[in-house]
Length: 424
Image 1 (cartoon, rainbow, N blue to C red):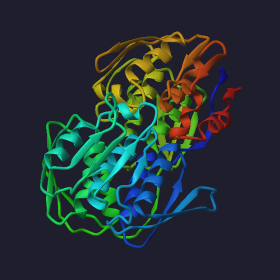
Image 2 (cartoon, rainbow, N blue to C red; image 1 turned 180 degrees about the vertical axis):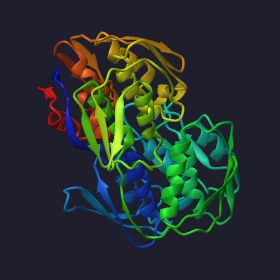
Image 3 (cartoon, helix red, strand yellow; image 1 turned 60 degrees about the vertical axis):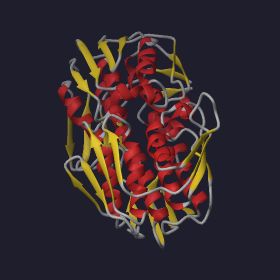
Image 4 (cartoon, rainbow, N blue to C red; image 1 turned 135 degrees about the vertical axis):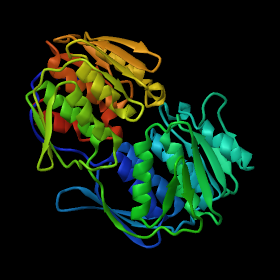
């Protein structure tokens, strides 16, 4: 794609939250009866989860509502799969993979998992340790990757211990599955839990579908023999995707982003506080986020609780006044790309001054950027980062990997053009 720099501005609606869509689809699939999930965007990741629950035996029907958003009607499996050993291709979705592993053990006695691009290299070793200790057959069919994977056996209730510095997706997967088992269970977190907001989002969704999770300090307490209840749920706006629209307005001529919940459990709403810390003129008026053109100053940001914001923050820092630091992002290395390096390379190719560190990067801001070509290496957030910062470049450039946005936000480039972006 060729991008010609132009000032971005206008009103836009945030896309539906991918994280909440994953969770609501799975909860509805595990319920008894018919549930309705509205405000869905059919990104590649969400399609992976839809296909996964269908392979468990859930029936999923798509329709379009009055706002031209996708609505799903999901006939659940009531916690017990109608399919034995489903073969699930998670494509590139880490959420689908890590959420579904415990679920297929609890409901189907196991399954086969596969993936594409870098997903087979993303770690699942915490599950391997837990489940092999329970006597579950864990067979990786590749000598160098974690997928294809075949698992078979009976998942047991009881005590689970997980370190707090691993992906919250492991905890979410267990929280989905453990209520289905006969006995009571508990999950104890060892050390500080990173991305804790994602676990809070899971507990909120489980409660919406009738599942109770209690917490006592660092321990989650899960009663067994619970039943998911059919429900209706409208997916809220996605703060992690909206971050790029907000930064685009701050660097450009202002954006007004609709559809975001200021009281959301999403940790990525921290983009508001981070932008204000950098001197941005940003506020919420009548539920609409107003991000105005601003002169930014450098700051240091800990992304341990909001790692998905790192690319959007880096875009802002690349043109802020002074030296900024992103830290606490060790897990950035195991996303769709090694985001420490992919952010560094993408921005430096545009003339930025970014130096990678072990847990983030140091960025010295420049007034303008320049470059002829950069790359989003199969990573949707890198492509959106480049789009947001493109207006600070002094000439057109080529972006390769632009279609990676299909993973989470397939309408992104249409929205970019609607804000005044120029592409060909």
